[in-house]
Image (cartoon, rainbow, N blue to C red):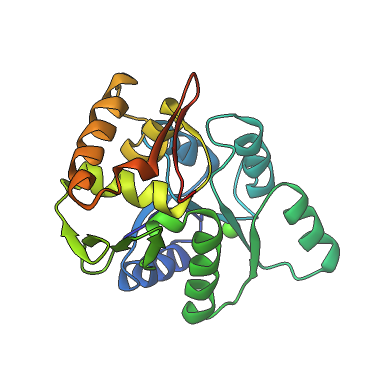
Length: 228
Ligand code: CA
């Protein structure tokens, strides 16, 4: 499954190289040359990951990372810092600002893709192609197929994304606002009721396999997928 990756890099050649490689790996790159542009793009839609150059004109990458971490809405976006610096102290500073990983230039496309994959797997498993299984449910992002105890489950695109997110984060309660943010993208103005509508459809689709009980309502909080 494609991840939306915001690339904040002021050097055109490097930006182009990264963007090309991300596309080759099946992702959707969004490009920004500086922190201001990056802010603007993040206002429209939250990316799944940010590749952030340390040395940017104006607001530096480190400062941008700090600001993103200080804002509740953008706090959880995974960040990989890109830098020409290799000093240990700089590396520590980068990680202290809340970066998830750190890649030193020059890097090979292969190394970068591997880092991106590892961070997504850890922080945003719902955008990877990894097969997920929870309590009789099996979801394969590659073939876009879901089975419940071996029987095919037919889902609409939104229910598929919702189930994928819940299965990638089982045993955790998600508020309706969090689900809107993660599954729908919060640039769209949606009411929290929307979540309830799609949860209902999802349960209905899971009823024949009797796995609808995996989707639990946590009163006053939100929803949880649990095999227990
Ligand atoms: Ca730079």
